[in-house]
Length: 251
Image (cartoon, rainbow, N blue to C red; front, side, top):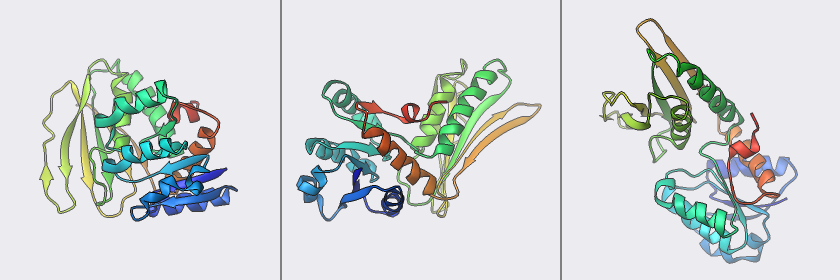
């Protein structure tokens, strides 16, 4: 398979290594200093482009790739609120293809399935209040993380006592704290911590007067995310529309 990379930071470089190790060819690498290569023959020859950039440029990258006739796999977060409807229309009505996930890790996909099942059980035990904490490296621009939001929405779909999520405490890289843990009872509170070079830790806690239940996914490195992105590209090559990890991983 021919793969183009959009974004050549730590994730882009790791995706390149894994893609090559799985027998794929990297035909184009686009970063901030060579945007004109979206129009190159090399980029247009790609079966799929894998995009890991920043929230403010992700949607623009999708449009450029689609204009070149290239399907997109993306792990960029923070754009969904502003451009989600446009992306859905492009994929559902205009024949474009985007495989998007807030997290491509196989472990996170399993964790998500477990968290939904646990929430279904806990729906019958209202004495437990649920909250979430996510920890990421100091370079991450958005909060809560896209993964935390996706996990929260899965939990909320199974809990009658929660009708949405809300931002709780935000621990900034400089040590300051914004927000508060004092949030409405009908909202799932998500606390965010930015610390060091943490790849990603997500914890869901059910707390009651009697006891506490916590489940956690702790990423050791970005390798799991990169492998998942390549697996998604392999899937996307032969599929169309708006795709997610629910299509790739059948639990």
